[in-house]
Length: 137
Image (cartoon, rainbow, N blue to C red; front, side, top):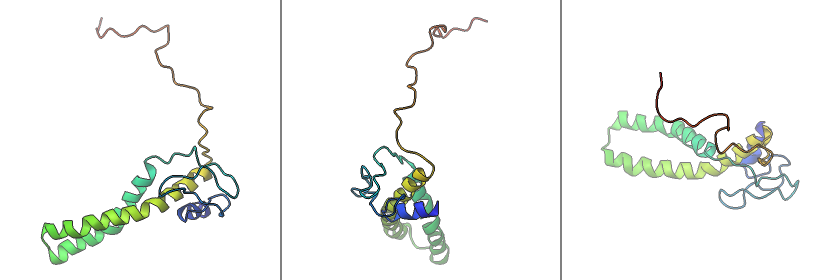
């Protein structure tokens, strides 16, 4: 598991370690150029930003609190220092975290092929009447 997470975080194919995971900054490549593992159907969705914010918060909040308690600078200093720092750290961490999430998804057996799943019904079953909004009772 840690091998696949590490390979994904370093933009290497989690399966073979040779090809690349990303085609752009955050766009997944359609498949590995070496072992042809498909990445096109994998959707990491909100997991990478969530983990990125979680990790960045745990790394940067202790120094924020320490600076506040030790020096008590004005709020504009906090905003001038910490907001850009949080933005830079989150931007730099997002790609490795997304690669690690892709490696984790492949390790868990996700393939991205959702066309096998049954479609959800669009209406209620015919034996049930739609509710009229009244209570008879």
